[in-house]
Image (cartoon, rainbow, N blue to C red; front, side, top):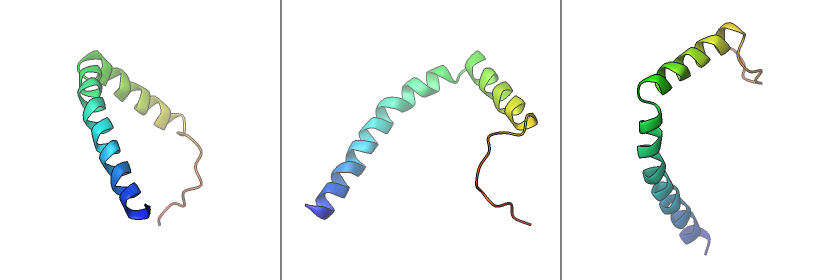
Length: 57
């Protein structure tokens, strides 16, 4: 049950990915993509979201 469960999960994830990608591509075309880019730029300028990541020197 241990290893077969991992395969099932990977297969399920792959199926979900294939269902989601066409929808995501549709929504990120044109105005949606520009809105996303504007949002990311604005959030970066505001300092982004706090994380516990360590900055590399």
